[in-house]
Length: 367
Image (cartoon, rainbow, N blue to C red; front, side, top):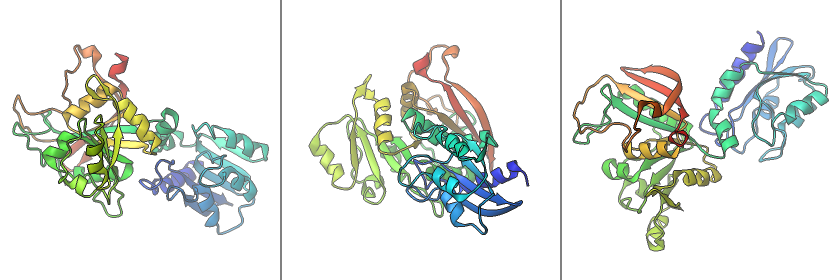
């Protein structure tokens, strides 16, 4: 096996931590000696041992003289665990292959320098692109101090998210809906507007085996989320945050008493200031949000410049209807050259449906 194959194995291990380590990065490690893998590990849960330490714990042979393959630069600072770079140096490995450098200012190449000073041969960049993509959420969160926001919607082939009567269940098939629940497990939070809660009474939970429920975030300007909605009735068992501009403490207490967290933000152009909301949510350790709101919240999120990625599920159906809603409401742009630009498209076939995933290259704040 070569460096690429060992790093692929480390990457596979890193993916096993999806949904369990937020807001920490996904990391996998493989230790190789005399052409044989003698230890493997990955970051399994937030606050637990990191990938390198788990790999050392699994050793079948002495690591002295071995090579270690790790998808992300070992940490060099004290957090919930001691610095991994010290364990690497102490182990006696003589070569370390690193895919991605850690953008965290507390690390940022320091581990590389420290390992090289200890006489370890360090190589950087093997499968860097793949490992960077795996940790896109972490890289954004740690550098921008804001959650990575994914705007998701399902529409028909004629661009409708519901019929003219408002009916929308179901636009996509079972495979697409399963993918949505996998993403609810992947991202820390799920956000909708109060209109969606009133219209659909959703649970916004994760329904895959072993899945983790995302933190439910409701944008509710005047605090009118129904107290008998399923979200409020289950707030004690699934973490729920209501973002509002309402400052009525009596109203607040009605929701707090059943387990909700109230987050008050100012208004901007008569709407919740989503940029302020993102900063507060990041301080709460929420590194990523799946935006499953309706057309109004989608428009507000784009206008606020908080959307990093768009997931468009397209079903082979036609609803028609001039009044049938489309994915993004609001005024929209005035000219084609003011469009929100999407890049780096990825297309996946899910049963009869198509998923197009794109990064947002330009937001309205840059127009």
